[in-house]
View (tube, rainbow, N blue to C red):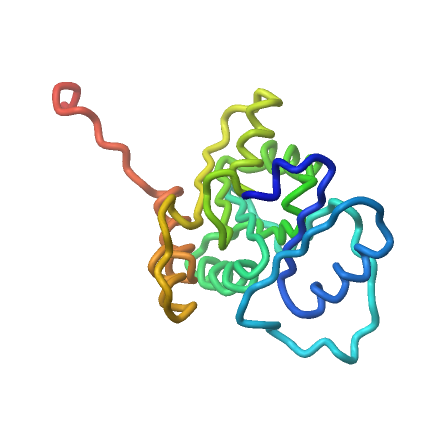
Length: 200
């Protein structure tokens, strides 16, 4: 959130160790300030024997294609979202899952496509919601006057986070498999209650 306002900066977040290596390699091919945000608990896989691969600049990665709802996950949340998408599929919910990886610049082409093909958009990031990736997406849709898509932002509330085990803290903010599954079900199947005076 504190990096986004810097002009011409690029902000990336890798989904795993291999993508982290690729982002570092890609960064050396570019000009200008670049920040790569990675989780404090280390890589999710050993990528020491992998070749470097240049990432398409500013482009997200589509992991699965679904309908009605799309999940955009950033950085450490991608692998958690992958597990959640598998559970949702077993429940009959096929979600489009995107590894956003570029917080800035946004993949505007993909965002426009998602808005055309989905009614719901869930954005998951291990970051303060205020001013984060989700906020950037909302700002983009507003600037393009795009309506008709319901957006939910999942992240850290506007408060100081206590110290503790990562899994416990993520669960506290529903940034886990159960939290993502619950959020998707609430978006798709929540019943809107009428005010009492209008209820029949």
